[in-house]
Length: 469
Ligand code: ADP
Image 1 (spheres, rainbow, N blue to C red):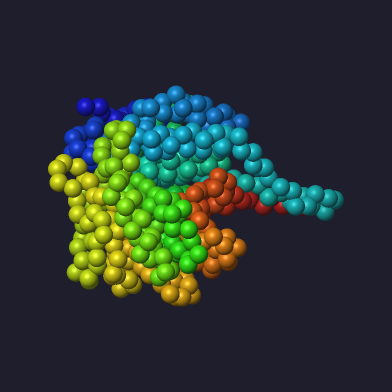
Image 2 (cartoon, rainbow, N blue to C red):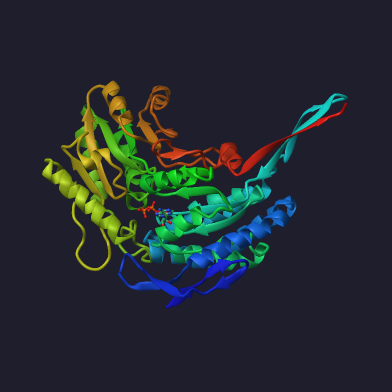
């Protein structure tokens, strides 16, 4: 079984303790991840701080390193994708897409030219420059659902902007991040990129280090709030990409046959373990029965299996806690009178398999509708009046994504613009536009990732004002 070490100050470092990581499809151990001690976290942060002056002064070298990282990732797509599949569960064709996205993101930032400064005034009286400066050491704390792309969406702009990074992957999926760190090790000067692994306590310890000036986090709302509170003492900057409870609204003129498949994948890609998956489906009453039937038929013919089996369309849930959460929410919905049309219970045998589950007969007030279930379960809720559906979609503390499905795209756009979410789609869900900022409204996040706004979060500005007389 493979052991994966930490990356600290340009060296792979063993740890005193290793944690087994299990394949969620079989229960077999996949490998062991070094668990960073507090001393190792401090060493990683100190190395990142030491590496900062040279790295922040070398913009061209930064872009060359990012370009070399993209090439290195492309050379190792197969190994990276297989390891994500083994530790996270998602089928191989989807993890290969993830790794392709990692390489594309690195390429994007390698090619990105951002002016280091602008001149506001330059005359006999004064010269005023607005200069972009890196923040310093960035802590990147990531979740288990799409581990490598969510990491690289943080790493690449943070490094491009001249910061150095200490990353902390989820304890459920640390191996792929540690493998990536080992592959990229020689492409960055020592200390520029460090990876420490371990549980939430390691993440918390990292986030509290005085030299950490920015925390970029993707994960649960509860942990995000905790990090926000913990950062206050030291006024650390924060970017939070948190959960969602996305609504999709199907209007009366939608084409049921055409939309069933994209709606299905909008809800069930990665077994629903996506922060901006469809988690509530509001359907005009006239289409409720046919659309539900089409989704049930699609769910029933879905091939569930090990992610390394090419026939598998969906893998298992990524960890036992997630499986138990989904089970508890579906049981609770049953107690509230829900009808379960497909799935509804875990599969026997090893592995955390839970089939795509369609539920009706419940609405607001039931946890499966009100909370983020983050699993392969979709409550389908009829409406008569679209105003009522808009109100229900917006009656949520979350505001990550939302979509409208209709043949009338102009009307769809007008309704989408009224939804309280950072991402609003018409006739699609999940699509992430390269170059666009992605961020949640309300409890779904703080700040943006990607685009100019996302990039700007990794710099601060200095106004240099030179009096000339
Ligand atoms: P989940 O419950 O889905 O695992 P979390 O938000 O707990 O989501 O986890 C996302 C990431 O945050 C993981 O890397 C996890 O180890 C880390 N984490 C958990 N608790 C804390 C914390 N208190 N401070 C910093 N990081 C944490």
